[in-house]
Length: 464
Image 1 (cartoon, rainbow, N blue to C red):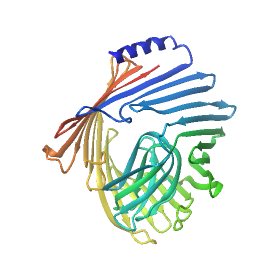
Image 2: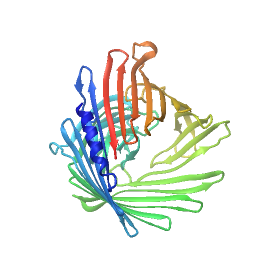
Image 3: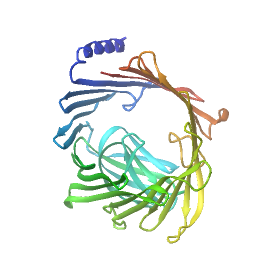
Image 4: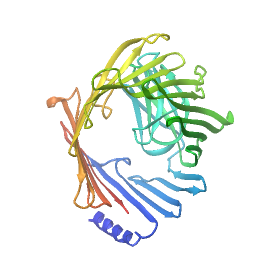
């Protein structure tokens, strides 16, 4: 009843503001687990976003609350001054204590992922201890805001060697240790993650004659930095990009080189686009080199197989090269068949393929607003939701009667150790229903095949 009264009051209040430049959204969720308990801040939360647009400028505020109180407060401004486009964001995150967060994982996998719960400004990450399957297995560290798109940090490490403090200097929720060597895996890892209580990020862009020049200045209580970049094209719309990064006010120097990444697109034979990428870095250890990687990649490569194309990448590092081929079976516009595989290459020199390992298969098909997807991992190193080896999903989307959107999905997860029929371990159902174009309600239920209900989430999104 309290929620209904709050929603009605908010709708009534915002109705009188529709003609002004004020707009925003209120999003929240209440999550409970069984036996009954309120879930953590990342599952039970409330977000209020307010924005006011005047002329070419927008000023906004985003407040995030959890069961423990205020989690973060963000203020921002964006607009243009002549040819320059500016965006500035200030983030305040109440952090208890100044010590870095420490965590550890123990599981044979190609990735160890650490979840901070909500986005924070991450100063640096340090892998304090790690156990790989081999002293020759290479690995790297990445951060992500959504768990899907990753920014890989400078440096590729080998074997059971601690990383030291690797600078990050960006807002992220997830930190991951990812194995680079084909067939390799990480068994155990321990990390320390340093967070800033305050950060101020300002981005300036200049667009002229199809070329974008930009700079980003980051000032934080921990790590501050500066990056300068360019985005453009040449010839027949072939891409050219480059970004140079610095760290500000380290004990060793006032402006330290952190890394460089540049891409250059060109056509080669029957290939319309081949992308060359060069990565340089500031060595984190005495054994590392400033050169990190030179790679060449292309998509839609036709090798003469009917209905099969390949995405290919050839990467040269300081001491080795790797070849990655991802076959894609084209079964029409509504069906996709993808095989995940890794190639082993021979000694440096002539291109030599020594092994082919298929570790995953993904099949998806869509028709009349209904979609089906299956994802199966065939080894014991890749997983779905960190635990399961297979997932089947059925999803339906469409329009509701009141200008809203309807979305419903059911996912079944399978575990080789499950004692249930067909090894079914968990079922997850998601429902998103737009009551109007401004109000959407969400429901999520997770049920274990043995043990019954595990989690129930009720959420909402109201925008105006």
